[in-house]
Each structure stands twice: as structure tokens, then as C-alpha cells.
Image (cartoon, rainbow, N blue to C red; front, side, top):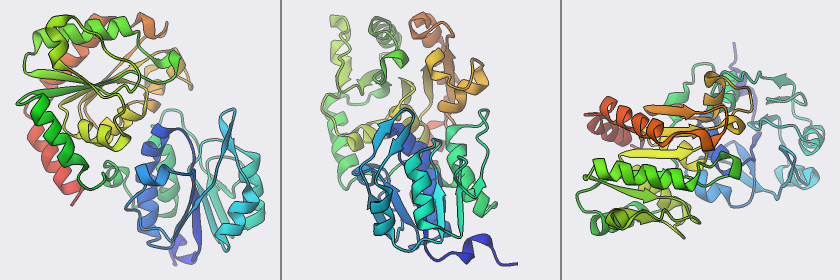
Amino acid sequence: MQPLCSRFRYPAVIFANAIGDHLLALPALRALTKIFPRRLSLICMPGFRRHFFTGLRLRSICEVKMRVRGRSRVFDSGRVAEKLGRCDLLLSLNPWRSPSVQKLVERLSPALSVGLTPEFHDVLPKDPRRHASEWAFSIPAHLDPSLRLADFAYPPSLPPGCLARVREFLEEKAPAKRILAVHNETKPEKVWPQHSLIQLVESFLAHHPEFVVFVLDPQKRCEVARPFRDRVIHSRGLPLPYAFAVLRESSLFLGVNSCMLHAADLYRIPGVGLFGPRNCRYGPTRKRFEHWGFRFSRHRHVWNPRGMEHIAVGTVLEALESLMKSTAGSRRARKAWENSATA
């Protein structure tokens, strides 16, 4: 029997969402380019390919401006259809519905369309018990059930020289030190109070002289007490690829539901994720909020149903300590995985 994917010569995929969602969709896009090497066209928002999708073997890129409307996006479907030309298979990794996507399906009239919302021929389920990256990966797995998410879940490519410059900086600023990377900037309802973060950083550094803390927040500063100031590095103005490179060199991560948490997950950095009720769109249970948390690296999720301000510093510190004990001796294994994943 002829494989489903071999029937199509002009496949296209559309994806557009928040910054962190691009990291969640990255394994699925890699899998699709394996199915359709140099045959797949990508529809995305301007500039996102440069940060997330370099190295993909694509036939073409269609960048289009999209406006946020509620939880979805609207765009000029006519312009997209004209730029794509022929399309016999349309795929969507988006979890949202949009009249623009409906119009695009009608204009392209592909032999088959597959997505997560009702406007497609094959509509795949959005199981809230599954991780967000698994939602996106259900699209390539529908075409080729032999594909495995873990085989494609590695970090985005870094620009040439980026990692070397970050390593040089860290050797100067924090020689022979381990790094706890911290990220606490996103939508206000998903942020941990700054005074709690400062207290956590001071307590952690007091107990771990072998560490420095690298704060990956471009706007806020972590104003710790004087004895700890020379062991806290701030990244104001640091471009996104350089922040990813800092994560790659880190031993631990602490952060909220954000792009950096997903990047740390792809780098297999042991991490603690902080969540409140607004992070739990699909319900108040632990399993459901983990839809947006860590999926691949060793981790702890700290959640308080009353809100982020009710997450206790002691609880987070205990989670970090527990994670460090459970990952002792695993740094060599992570380096071996990095080498194999990027080979």
C-alpha cells in the first residue's frame, strides 16, 4: 500500500503563535521536513524563521503579518494562497481557529488538509492531558506513525560564533562557576513576585558558593543584597540566540511558563517551573497544567491554585535542592546527548 505522505508533491504547513509556542512546534516541523525533504512550504509570521526554523529543509517560506484576535490570528489568506501557488496537502500546527485559515483552506482546495480545528478534512484530537508539543507532533505522526517526538526534540540552531562568545563571556565573569539560569518575565498573571525571586536567589547563593545566577529577564533586575551582587549576572539587551546559548551552558533553570522554560527543556537542562491558576487553561489539576511545563528534561513543577504570589520561597528552594540531588552525576550524560542530537 502506498504511504499517505508519498501521494503529495506540494505540501504546506502553517504555524503562528507566541514566541515559546514556536519551540513547542519545532520538533513537529523537523519531522515534517523529514517526511517531505525540500518539498514543504512553511507559512509563518515575519522574522520567526530566523530564530527558530533555520536549518529546516524547506521548499519555500511564506511570511505573512498576522493580527491577534482573541486566541487566534487573522491574516490575508488571498496573499498567502497566491504566493504558495499549488498546494495538494495543507497542514496546521495551530491549536486555534480563525476565519483566515478557513478561507485559506477554501482558496487552496487541497486534496487533503490536516489540523487540530474543525475546518480541516482530518481533525486530530486536542487531549488536555498531553503536552503541547505532543499536540503539534500529532500532525506528522498522523502521516507517519513510526515517528517519535523525542527524536526531533533538540534545541534550535544558534548563529555562527554565538556559543563561543557566550562561553568567553562566562569564563571572564564567572570562571569555574556553575550557572542557575532564571527567567521571570511574561504576562503579569504568570510572574512570580520579584521580592520572592530575590529572596530565593540570595538563599540559593548562600548555600551554593559554586554557583552564579544568570537572570534572563530583559527588563527587570534582580536587586539582591550587596554580598551576592557579584554573583548575579543580568542580561538586559541580550539577543534571543545568546540567551539560548546561556541556557546551554547552565546547570539548572528556574522559571515561569515562558519561552525560556521551553528552551531549557529542549536543552535538557534540569529545571523548576512555577505555575499558578492562570497557567492552567485546561483545568486545575497537576496533570493538566503540565500541558505547558517541562516535557523532556528532569524537572519539578511547583504550582499553587491560589496564585503565583502564594508560591512559597521555601517550596521552590526545596524543589531546586531535590532536583540537584536527583541529577547529580548526570551532566556527562547530558553532554553526550547534546553531541549526538546535534551531530
